[in-house]
Structures are given as C-alpha cells and as structure tokens.
Image (cartoon, rainbow over all chains, first blue to last red; front, top):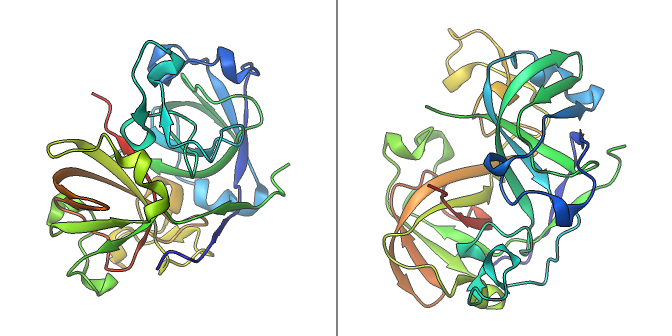
Length: 133
Length: 133
C-alpha cells in the first residue's frame, strides 16, 4: 500500500553561520542563531504575504541524517535508553523532515531572516507554513 | 542551489471514514474524525515507544493537492483576497506536506488510532514526531 515514492523539490536553502551538525542545538529554543532563508525565484508568489513578526514553521530536509535509523539514544546520550525515533525529535529517521518554529525578522526579496533556527548552512527548505494560534 | 530532488518513502497510510477531500475539515480541531494510522512493518522498531495519551504530529503527503499553486483564496472562499500559500495552511503548495497534531487513542501492533485527523483515507504518512511541550 505504501510502495509509491514521493518526489519533493526544494524551494530554497538555509544560509546560516551553523555549519557543523554535531555542534547544532537539538532544538531552536535551545539557542539556534538567526539565519536567512533563501528562496528560489520560482516560488516568489507564494511568499508575498510573509512579513516581519510572522511566526512560521519552516520545514526542511535534514540531508545529513541517517535514514536507516529506527531507534536512538535520545539527545545522543548513551546513558539514555534506546527509544523509537517516532517518539523523539532525532534528525535520524526514515524521512528526515525538520520542523522549525521561528519568527520572521526581516524580508528582503527572496531572502527572509528568521530567529533561532537550528538547521545548518545549506539545509534544503521544502515548505513554510504559518503557525496557527 | 536547490536543483536536487529528494525522495520520500511513505512509512504508512491513513485509514479514515473521510474519503472526499472537499468535505474534509480545513484543520483537525474543526472536527476531523478519529482515524487509524497503518504503518509498514519495516518501521515497527521506530514505533516502539508510542502509546495511548501521547500527543504527536503526523506528517502526511497530501497527494491530492495541486503542486503548481502559489496563491490561494484562503479557505477556498473567493471573497477572501488571494494570499501567498506560504502564509496559509492550504493543502495546495509546491510540497504538500500536511502537519496534523493529534492524540494517540490506542495502539494495536502496526495500527495506531488517533483523534481528530482531517486527512482523507489513503493519505500517505511520511513521519511522526512527538509534540514538544
């Protein structure tokens, strides 16, 4: 029933001072830096209503993750018992889609600056959604 | 910079009484029915710690969505001005990944029952994450 494969096309890329995944915080609220989202011209019309102060969820493809991993020691700490990845926010998982709630700081054409993003430089962006309150 | 395509492999499928996308609620909190998530045997180890009462985010691939849509009338109401899709939760968008916060009601092997899921029957599941509090 789940034989089909799905093709996702990146819509942009993260531009960040974070370059080492091992040094990246586990979650943005633990201290990710401000970063830029750099979008492809082809999706410009979809960005027309994104503005400073917006709270958005950035969906990324964590392309450095291990896709064959189903159990992990949470927070990469061997003292933590192994746990199924679907009960963790580990980047390692069959489809490593990252969810990053951030706030928009600035918009400059196809470049959007956001606060506290833990994704490393070069991470593909696959979607952006508003946070629903 | 975003030339690469990404291949996502479904890990399961939604089993629901909802079959008509046009009749589906726009968001689960508007009255999606209880539904079952039916997982592939290959990801069983990743599910080992999911249990009743857990609050999870189900990520789906909204395979009936229009991927060439960049602006929509919010809530499919022509009276609403056109808006960039990245400022809406429209299913229509370049990469139609659905985010569904739900609560686990029951676990039966590879089948997990959840509350209030607005995805229609047959929707591919691509990831499951715990809600972080």
